[in-house]
Length: 321
Image (cartoon, rainbow, N blue to C red):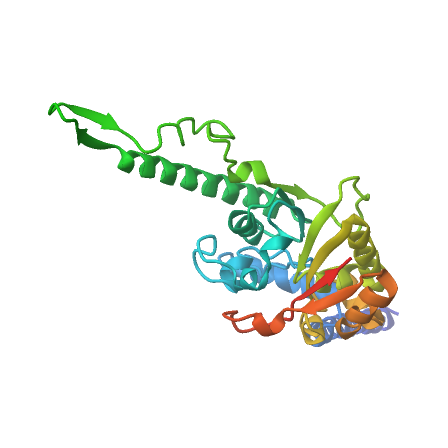
């Protein structure tokens, strides 16, 4: 009897060992094939513990890249003019109310305000961190301009000698820049903080504001709207832009090509799913905006564009309401 029980015990132990080996083998297979999210997660955790100094790759599911203009323009992006500005027309911005959708850190928003003297320009972005960065750049540039004007005024002070031989101080501009703390100087000139503003906003999901605009920009943003909210989200965005524009207003569009969708389709489960359901590819946008949304005509600005970095050679269009 004791011998029989001993055999049963050994048999049960062998069975448990086989099951443990089988379980470990399947787990290893799942991890090798990348089919098990839990296995992948455990692997990442193990790597992080074994190499804590290794940086995890930042994912930007909305195209909300940090240092975007550094990639697009180069180091010191806030000082270098974005090549796209060269194809813009002065009459689209001077004295006009403007909206920049997906402004990122606000570099091109600020540059447009500086070059074309808008009445106002609002930059919106889904990423609150980028909006904070945009305000930081705005404060920095306003301070640089204020310091520059002060230095210019100081250099204009010179010593002149009158006919009697006495010396007196004179200045070409006695009032400009006298009060750097005010938003307007005494000559009535506005600084950038009067013109430029930023706001965190999901344009697709937000309510339609009361204010309308003369010019709306959407530069390298449509792909991210498309991947995250599909065809319906894109149509919603285009329709909202048309309604926000005043009669005769201009919509400046820089769409990303379809091959760039493929490169970014896996940044999230949502983008991967929407990518396969997209019917209206970028080459259909022109027809959609003219025939479905209601724009009167379009102007292709691409041929005039030069100086863009590799990978950013994208078409730019101006649609007129």
